[in-house]
Length: 328
Image (cartoon, rainbow, N blue to C red; front, side, top):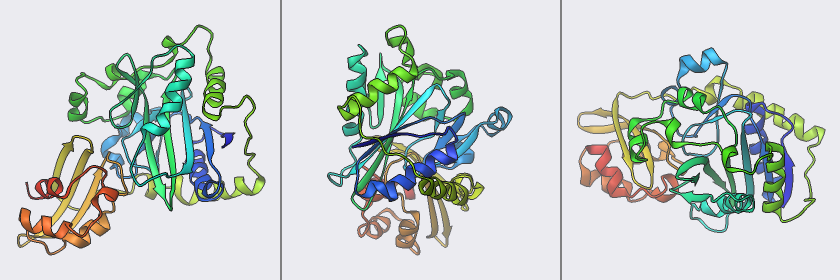
């Protein structure tokens, strides 16, 4: 497994770097990357950024917003947060985030921190989250990335994100601020972020001096081009907003939050869009095509869904549950 650290803290560059590595070197080599972003909100692929972000606060504070390739929820990054990315072969079709969380928990164990893998994508200490994780899969390869709140400004985390009330209540807490924590108070005195990066890299790679991937001038030019064409654009980061007016929202255990926007005419569906913090490809075009012309009746919707690979599109969501949400 090759190791690299991103040379920049620009979120548009770093998201472009992830994709570039996944599409090129990562097709034949396993990689592990550590990186940081200056003040940024990173939204999941399927989320409606306008709904997830406190736009006024973000604008006032100069916080950038960028959309990633993977699903899941929005997260806040600053220079007190460390991000990690694994790129490797996808061993099977199942979405298994725990496999890549284990090396992080193991590294913390070496420092005396009793970290636990919790829920569908979190790593916690004392029941409070310090790491969220997500995955993107394509052509038999997986890109798994996660955050580590080392010494972040947690007050900004709480103010920058519009976390739905039902998500907070499902965790049994009263606010974003009360359900997250930094790692620093749990670490031995004197362990800096730089020192922690070294411990994490050695634990993951099993080597004192791991083989490094050095970015070439050609790599950097390609990453910059992708940065400009996708990750720094309004269309990619903010442009996904619902066109339809009928809104269905549901939090499904083991799936996440789903927001469905429907167009209905004469009692039949004529269009559909999907947003949320779920995992999977979330191909709304395929779903909309399958349901166009379908009567708004549960049995009819269920029949229309039978030909779709829902597990790939919406991890852990069954056809019966989706049909109930649509017609409810």
